[in-house]
Every structure is written in structure tokens, then in C-alpha cells.
Amino acid sequence: MPENSMPGRLVDLAARKDEARRAGSAEAVARQHAKGKMTARERLDYLLDEGSFHELDMLARHRAHGMGMEERRTYTDGVVTGFGTVSGRRVCVYSQDFTVFGGALGEVHAQKIQKVMDLALSVGVPMIGLNDGGGARIQEGVVSLDGYGGIFFRNVAASGVIPQISVVMGPCAGGAVYSPAMTDFVFMVRETSHMFITGPDVVKTVTGEDVTLEALGGAMSHATKSGVATFVADDEKSCLDQVKQLLSYLPSNNLEAPPVREPADEPDRATPEIAELVVGDDDQPYDMKKVIAALVDDGELFEYFPHWAQNLTCGFARIAGSVIGVVANQPSVLAGVLDIDSCEKGARFVRTCDAFNIPVITLVDAPGFLPGTDQEYGGIIRHGAKLLYAYCEATVGRIQLVVRKAYGGAYVVMDSKSIGSDLCYAYPTAEIAVMRPKGAVEIVHQRDIAQATDPVARRTELLEQYVERDASPYFAAERGYIDDVIEPAETRRTLVRALAMLRSKHEELPRRKHGNVPL
Image (cartoon, rainbow, N blue to C red; front, top):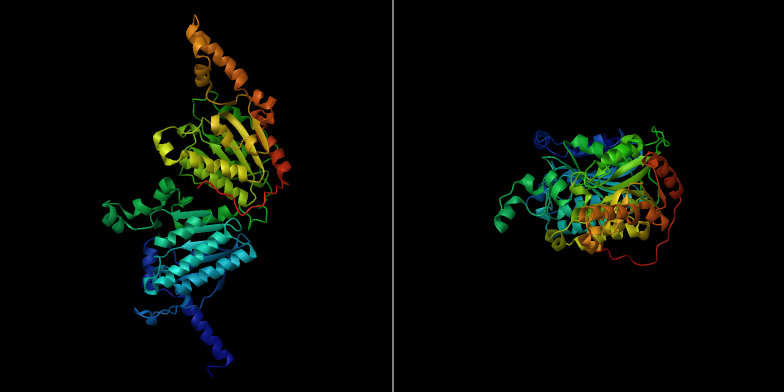
């Protein structure tokens, strides 16, 4: 059979593609499995619907010379790219292959990622990157660095247009970390995922610090301390399951509405349990997540940054089948006070919801901002302004519910009517005031109390008056700052109707290049 005949060419094509699928050596694959890690193709097989993956640039190979590269022109060049479906919805993907060049990024490797990113943006589908690489390919020098720049540029172009999801499933070091950092969500796996600008050896040389790889850049370090890892999983399969779950809450792009499901939970059900959950005394903690569970469909909350800034709970849920974003003070952690990390977390979540047409419900139980020199020197003013800016800028439907207390600037920042919230509600026991009633009475009535025959009785009398009159939700309702005072049992019904009304909300922003966020 002539080699240039069609049958001969088909045999050659099949051989080349088979070689591409077996790009990594058997030894390299065994090492990958020994670490509890899947290969690049195994990850795609697990993530995508069976038979849906269409690979692109399978036969691409590097063009580098020198340093032994001429003899190592492996197909795929260390990254598998293409498109497929997740639960029937289209996505674009790339999966770095640690068994080929250690997943290091070179010119062709970068071009493959850039091409699939361009495709995702042009057709308006989520972009999912599975990262498992040793950084820039040293043998290709500045060409590798240029490749990273092209990826970063596309990350920014796609920001707020399509969901961008980064899944770190191995090392991600040096300049490679900036692409995940600019995407919307970052997933990591305990023990096997690591992200850092400089590794432990360099840290030791420069600063003298002894730090392990896990402590420096492990999943839990980034989930609890740095605020880089949005979600953490115990193993790769559960990590990819979380990616699938996240996608179920997101639209394919910024011009679409989020997916709607037929609710199994009764939309009009009452929520009498909330009255039992919310403790009346503002000094007593309770778990706001239980309140959220009572409100949303089937009690399901897909929490955003669950390990970081836990004094503010954020996450995706559904009410009557429609996706919502929830932002809530958490009284069981630091009394739900706002601090630097929680403001940053909340601001990023609100902006993410706004970008992808997800209405935001804000549950307020805010004693104020955390005091102290650490917070002031760390820029609590600037970080608090980020949360304020995010709410003011958001054009999606916005609903505020004052659950228990809302004091001072924290009341304003937590999506008050004055910064554009569409509908604001409060429970009858809510307190809305410049500061806590005890402190306010001590300041305003200091002389009166001191001169009283019975200072204790007088203080108690004045405190009761302040709570009933000045801090009452009815006072706020009289002025129109609260649209309605509702019973806890009516909360879900109220939110269902409010969300239905806001579904067609449309707002035109002033024409400008962009706002200047207080970064």
C-alpha cells in the first residue's frame, strides 16, 4: 500500500494520534498515580460528559532548539485542550500534563491555551483550566514568559464576560500563579495542590524562614490565610465534582440568565423556625447558615470561600428554582463583625454575582467594623470601601433583610436602601442605629444618668426608650429606609415575591471607561 494513499495516510494519522494520547511515559504516569493524582486525560474524562470531549491541537509540538529539546518533540506539548459538555452544557477546557515536560509552559503549550481561551470567549462558554505544571519552560527562555503574558491578557479580556474556573491539581509556581489569581474561582486539592511565587528553598535563602511546601502554598494555607483558594477538596474526583456543582449555578456568559431548576421545595412554604434560630439578645451568637438553610431551596448553600473570613458567609443557592447569591454576617464568628478579609471576600462575591446576573440577598446582623490598630494599619477603610463600592456598582436585583442588628457604617455598607438596594426588610426585633444602644445612651444621656437618684434604673429606662424608639425598625420604616417589617415565618414567601418582581430589573450605568475601585 503506497504511503501517500488514503488508506496509508489514515494508518499514519491513527498512529500519530495514538502516540499523542500516550504522550507521557509509563513511568511518569505511574509516578502521577502514586501521588494520588490522575493524568491530564483522566481528569477530562471524569469532568466532561462521556464522549463529549473534542480535542484541539492534539498534534502540536514545540519548535525549540538546544538543550536537548530537538530529541523531545512530544505531541500535545504538555497540555490537552478542547471543548465538551458538563451536564449537557458547553465548556472549553485545558488540562496540563505533568507527565510531559512536567507540564512546564513553552511557546506552543501557551499558544494552545490561548487558542482555546479565544474560542471560549468568542462563543460565550465557561473556560476551565486544570493546572498541573512546573511553571515556565526554562529551555525556551523568554518565549515562555511571553506565552504567560498572552494568557494573562486573555484572562482580563474574558473577566466578567464568561466564567473562568481554575483547578489547581499539582504545582503552580512563579508567574503561573497569576492566571488562576485573575480567574473567578480557584479550586485546590489537599496535600497535592501547591501555589507560590517562590518555593521554600528561595524563602529560606532570602528571609531565613523554614517553611514546608504545604505550609507555604498548600490548599488549606490558601483557603484559610491568603484567600486565594475559593474551594478545597480532599481528592481530585471530589474537586471535579465541586466544579460541576459550581457550574450548575452559573450562566454560560454575562448575557444569559443563570440556569433555572424546577423546585422540589415548596416556594410558598412558611419559615417559622427562623424565630427560634435568631437569638434576641444581640450579645448571643447563633449560626446564620441555619437561617439561610431555612430560606433556600432544600436547605442547600454552595458556600464561597467557606474557610476564609468566616465572619461573613457568602454562597450560591436557589429560591423557587432560581439562582441567588447570599451575603450574610455570621454572628457565631467574631460576632459577625466586618473586618479586612470579610470586606474583601464580600466585595469579590458581590461583583461576581453582578457580572453573571445573579441577584443578591443580604442578611444583616452587623455590630460594626472590627476596631484595632491591626485593622486600621492594614487598611480597613480601603477594604471596607471595596465592599461599599461593589454594592453601589451592582445592577442586579438586590434585597436586604436586617435579621437582628445593623449598627453604624456596617448598616450602610451591607446593602442599605441608601446605596441602591431595591427592597429592604427587617424583623420586628431588629435594631438599626448609629451605634449599640448601650453605648449611645451612655454618650447622649451621660449627665442625666449621673444626676439621677437611681442611676441604674434611669439608665435602664433610657435604654428601653432608645431601643423602642430610635433603634426600632418601625422608625426606619417610617422614613422609608425599610420597605416592610415582616414576620420571620413570612421570610421565604416575601423573598420569592421580591425576586419575581426584580427579575426584569434593568439599569443603565453612566457612560465611562471604568470606575476606579479602591484596590
